[in-house]
Image 1 (cartoon, rainbow, N blue to C red):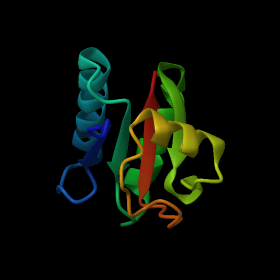
Image 2 (cartoon, one colour; image 1 turned 90 degrees about the vertical axis):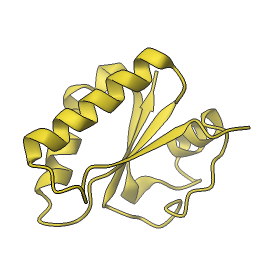
Image 3 (cartoon, rainbow, N blue to C red; image 1 turned 180 degrees about the vertical axis):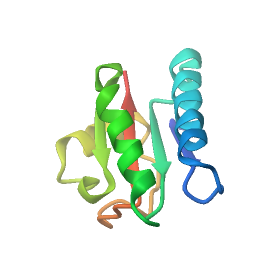
Image 4 (cartoon, one colour; image 1 turned 60 degrees about the horizontal axis):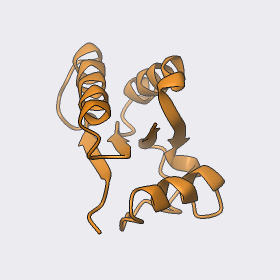
Length: 110
């Protein structure tokens, strides 16, 4: 089974905050429209923390559009949403599983 987890890296692209959030929104809309992916792994990086804050605020503002928002720190097989999202995506290999990586955020789409 092909993974239904899309990975986007907006943290290492040199984007401004506005451009990074625009890129995130574009990818979310694209995934919701075409239905090929069930979740998005957003790599926002550590940096100053400004992009992580913006991404998570954007996700929380839009949470009604999503099944769940999972912070990298919580992404673990013992987390119910993480386990269910992984199953919904075909249980893809992900080296961040259980790594408590705060530089990523997962968006589980409806």
